Image (cartoon, rainbow, N blue to C red; front, top):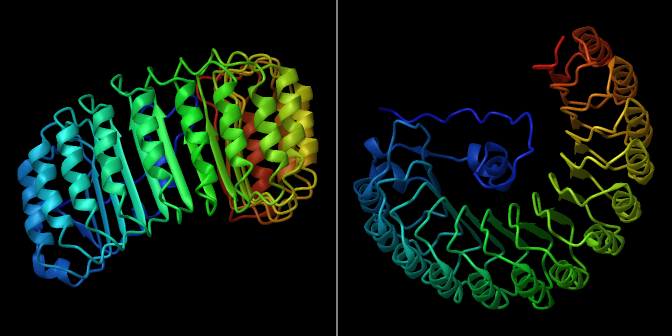
Amino acid sequence: MASENPPIKSLKHTRSSDSTIKPTFLKTTFPYRRKYLFNLNVQSLNSQLIKRNEALTWEFSGAHITENNASFNRLANALRSTKALQKLYLFCQWSFKVTDQGLLHLSYSLKRLASLQTIVIVIENGNQVTNTGLYYISQGLKELHSLQELSLVFSRCSKITNKGLYKISFGLRKLVYLQRFCLYVSENLNMTDKGVEILARRLKNLVLLQNLNLTFSACRHITDKSLEALGQIFMKLTYLRDVSLRFSECPNIISIGGIEKISEGLKILTHLRNLTLNFSECNKVDCKWLCVVSQVLEKFPNLLICNLIFDQCEWINDQEMSVLCQGLKSLVALEGLILIFAGCAEVTDSNLEEIGESLEECQSLQSVHFCFSGCVRITDKSFDFLMKGLKGAVGLRMVTLEFLDCPKISDGGLKSLGEGLKKHLKLETVSLEFSTCSRVTMAGIEKVSKDLKAVNSFVDVSISLQDSGI
């Protein structure tokens, strides 16, 4: 059966954390996923065809398809015939039958691909993959001295432990030209601070690194010590421009010491332009966390992208949000902003007023994503505040607003929203989510859509009102 490139469905509500690899994660972390030059199906592997391509994507995407060791062996045999390959992307989403032996086949091929500059390996549901498999991968990596980008995803691979991270770290030691490194580990109860500390020690040597993306989602034994270890690596990685740290659903991250170490390290990065922090569902942390984050933002007026994801953090209140907004005011060069605080029930209209005020000087904004679903104290006034804050963003192209389960929002708020958005003539995409908002009606939704289309007939408008009791 021929493999086809599946559509990537947009997620309407990002309340849950990174515990699974959602389409939005793959789309943002691996933007080249849909831009590859060659899509390979394991049933039709053709070494002559591969030989003529510089980029190769191998992807299984259907639940009825299961990779196995024979698939990897066939791929490895085909790869051995080419030496010109520069980019290799492997997306294995149903890896129940893949074992260490399959990764051994892959390792043999990697050693021969001296021209490789980019590798992406995604293994989901790899319950048979162990530390030995990661050792095989590391053996292949250490021969790739020209490698510039490396992304490794191990989602729900329950047999991988700290020792596996040690093996991967060993493979990094000769990648002196590496500029981008992404490691994604999720739902792994074997992962502890020791593994992160081992990785951090090796990362210090990648002095040319510009992009660092680390995710340890739902690794419930990770504590503040992991953050402290990572905070110390930034003094060596002074070329970093893009930093993403995701530790959602890690309940043992509780004190302010870890985020302070991260803060101290980040402040050294004079080239930093993109910052993502995701600590969703870390409900036991010190209430001063957002104060520390705000202090980091104040150091980077030239930050271009800022993504702050703290949904389901019950400790966040209106006072904490006010402090955060002081830091947001410093980001005058901002082009993209994501604020996700779903389920933070203490957030109020006054906080969104402060967010709006903090954005008034951000005239370069092109994309915003605000999620305040479940913030039950928010009313229609919030939309007036947000639209006022975005008034100066003349180049605004993408707007995503998620306000599910906000019972005080009504059609009146949508009217203010529509009037504010239609002033942005360059808008390309508008996505609005008001599910379970009982006072929002279809008439209000249609009015917003009509207003936007009247000004710009090419704007893509997506509005959800599912289960709103209309």
